Image (cartoon, rainbow, N blue to C red; front, side, top):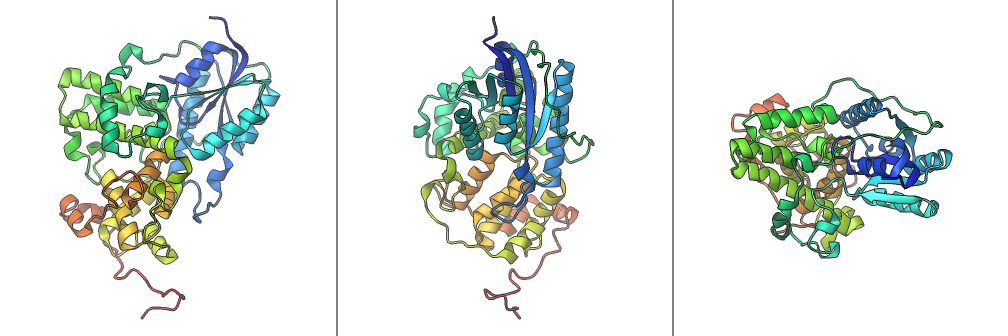
Amino acid sequence: MEAKHQTGLVWFNLDLRLIDNLTLIRAAEQCQQLVCCFVIDESWFKGNRYGLNGISQPRWRYIQQAIADLAASLQQHGQQLIIRKGQPTTEISTLISTLEVDAVYCSDDPGVYERRRWDTLVKRFPYITFERVSNHTLLTERELDFPLEELPATYSAFRKRFEPLAETFPSGQALSQLKALPPMPRRTIASEHTPFVEPSGYLQGGELAAHEHLTQYFKSSAPSHYKETRNALDNFADSTKLSAALALGNISPRQVIDALRNYEATQGANESTYWIVFELMWREYFHWYLRRFQEKVFKFGGIQDKKPTTSFYSQRFAAWCQGKTPYPIVNACMHQLNQTGYMSNRGRQLVASCLIHELQLDWRYGAAYFEQQLIDYDVASNWGNWQYLAGVGADPRGSRRFNLDKQTQTYDPNGEFIKRWHGEQAVSKIDFTDAADWPLS
């Protein structure tokens, strides 16, 4: 097929992989020359409206490992990853102008700021082609059987509509394969950053590590017991540990479905293997949820415009972040998060419930802290889940409050998790000053 464009630019974001990367494959098919780039957003390292930094060291380490792995993979295909640091629209504009790019390709990110940046570039360069490719979900918007503005109001309703479409998920040889990449232009721009590649951290970032973990997980018997073990607080093999790789696009959800189907073909399907699909459908739902509601996903009143009876107390929020609350299970979970960049799904529900109900804090501060800390941070899943638990999102039952004592007895009856993560260092009270900052006796 004859190339449509002279020089294409692939802007990597949530698709740091070569296998089953529909964006990269589309660009390779349509362009004579190719520029591959990743922009490190300078806002990640600045304070935000919640008084937090954009990104923690564990999360930044994981991202850099993924960038380094992508750069190495592209090099094996005769390509180079240009890594720039700054304001994304500025950096992409410079590449377009300097390298005479006539087509820009990017995976379809659901984020609000990401979509605004894309729209800015489209208006700034009306004479070139811009193409967003659905590369982060199981189905494209066109494959959904409803218009986006008619997205079901609850996950249960969405699942009933979505499950019959599961037969269309590609698998095996149907997964998109990269054959070859066009060469780089003779003229190029140097990278501004060399990724930190120390193989350390709770999880290793990058496509190679993600693929190896995916393979090993489905070689074990763990998928057959996933539903029974997924609520464990600390054991590594009790959940898939695929969320971080999915968040950065080191693997695609289609690859996970493919591996799961192969497992079921040899080991048999059961409720646990179905539950892995169930969780992937939650991820899918929140992607379209963010696409549908955009700015409302970040508002205090949520998509329901139903403001919770909570406020903000800086001392309480700091205690929650540092794991210095009166609740040992919460402290242990927060210590684990701060040290590793990871927390179990059950732990996330417990600490969120504590922040909203026990500490009566604005849920958005908790969501922002997770955004800073989590190595598997996914904008749609994170903010959608926090809205759900705060009672301003997709949950028809209202906010979810967990009995922390009961949860502790259920999930850490012997106190092993609390002891391991030093959660027993609890304080006896929530507040030490009153509203006017006078000490409380």
